[in-house]
Length: 66
Image 1 (tube, rainbow, N blue to C red):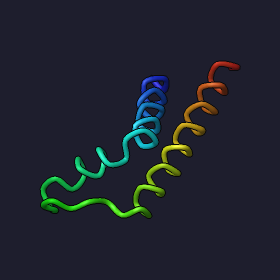
Image 2: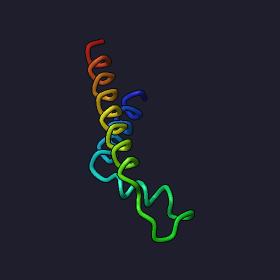
Image 3: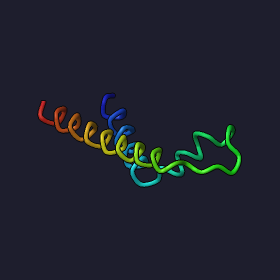
Image 4: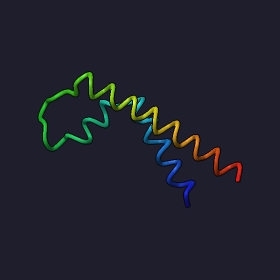
């Protein structure tokens, strides 16, 4: 079961790095009309995505060794 969560974490990390604007639109589609994310938001999303990818890969490798 932990494999499912790790795959979800990895997919979310990839999406955060590849398409942070899409995630911003999904997150704010009800609260902001015609707005755009700031450069700081985009940077933070990409850094968070890199962290998620690294954490998922590390956990996958740890589970594979056991």
